[in-house]
Image (cartoon, rainbow, N blue to C red):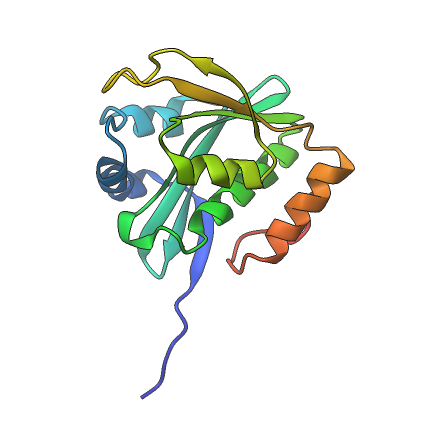
Length: 179
């Protein structure tokens, strides 16, 4: 019997990926995006960039950002319930940060639920810091969002940390050089 290593790679989200993405989203988020939101993002939002992480033919995670002047705003990061804790969130974040470099962004920003410890720790590992709160941001339970920002992604410290994280990820489609 021959053991084939499964291939895990990151690439652009396509329209045919949307149903799988929506299934993951329903699994992991109390308020998934409306049904047509991803179609709109992919087809009509020129500042949007969305990726998926595939293992063999299955999508195990997805993420997106919007380019807004010199910042990249991370709109979503999601990993299938049974696949969490395997480093896929790190890979998705790394791919978004690489995209932010390609787009000429200087900073990254995002909102996250304070109750989502795992996500908060992931973002902190990439150098994000809490800079504020949006009161009652999440409509399902009126939970606040914490607003997190990175330092300039062009600082030596940010690049060094990012390179260390990149070096620890073994996924195809990720450049091994930060910028």
